[in-house]
Length: 435
Image (tube, rainbow, N blue to C red):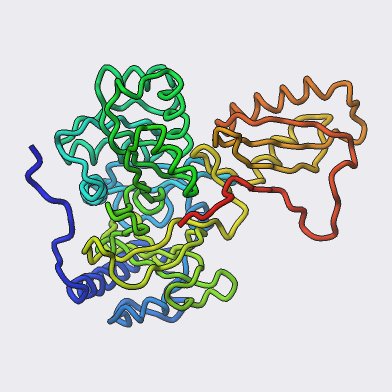
């Protein structure tokens, strides 16, 4: 039985702030001492570790971006010796080089601890059976969900993504009580269980989902089809340990993030100045205890807002809204991060296809995600070859991006031209409030 609580030990916001100040000072000194790249950035900004004495000094520090991580491939912003690194994880998709992140033993332990806190906040106990239907491998998802489940003392069922028959069999045979997945996978499984007439034979009480945006209506549909299961939106990113950096509480009043492990700023993405509390902007994060690759004012590109005031659940952990969108052109489809430049590269390698294209993201009547790519035939191409070219593109997308897309090839010159940057992505997946 579970006897250890993973919830924060500090009881007041003053205690939390004192912890954050000490964590910020340690992180800046550690980064300056351990990374030549961080040291160069700090020197250029005219700031030294001794200058950091309060949380207000955070804004004196230079910003860090995804480009800093790619530029330092394969071990970007490393601040510890190689012999202290026990693991590498990688982002699910980037332009060009992947974003690799190093972990020390303490980093892994910290991640496991606060992820177990997510399970505890969602009401998961050692008596639960947790079906983990997320990706394993270089990605952080499967490892994070499983490590924390085992740390909590619950039974981990590492089903992995996809394979609907296996998922249903696990739910029946193992009597899983918790399903961990993406929102799209949660909807798919809810529909399958409903269509197969299994709802009275399974025991799913909670669905913990993340990795992609979801609306109120989508969450309600998943809950209804699962017979009233309680849903919890979990957050995270590879750069910031992985999933588990925040979760809804049982009062479902937006996301509590673990302010004892990292700081959140909300900046105007154009001016990079802080926005007033409660206003939407870009989330920028700074870690407080991360050893191998600390993040200092890292631009996540995610759009959210700080929720002011206290949550009715009583937790002193700060809150932010669910993610509303991105400030760059990256989009997430079925848990894969995709940039239009990915599509550019694939199209350029298929002769007879043109360079003009559009990506349409939507949901079908069953609320499943759909990606439709409309691409022009090359100027010298023949429309009679459209069908085999479309099949070829579908296979390339599946092999290289791990997603299945619908492809429509249209005549050369059919798509609009502009003297400005062409709009590539048309995302209509969210039609109602995410809050």
